[in-house]
Image (cartoon, rainbow, N blue to C red; front, side, top):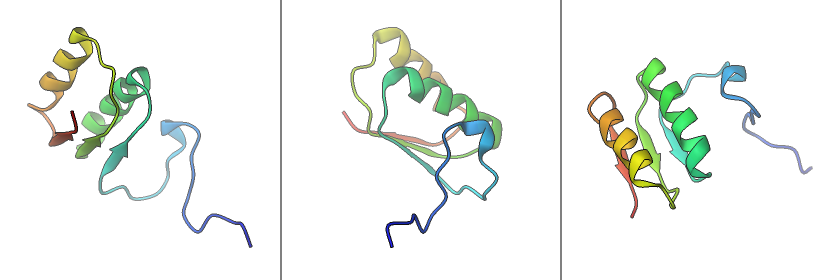
Length: 73
């Protein structure tokens, strides 16, 4: 039928479902916004996004002190 059987959200603030984990394969700028959401909601994150600057990598490292993060390189 072509319909999603799972919720799809365009903005993080629109999420109204229970979330267990975030799997991110977006772009670096979006990943940083996702990290803020994950920290606020105490959610683990799997990061499959690439192309981070050194500054962005440091932000991810700092976030990993607060929430579990698994990152692909």
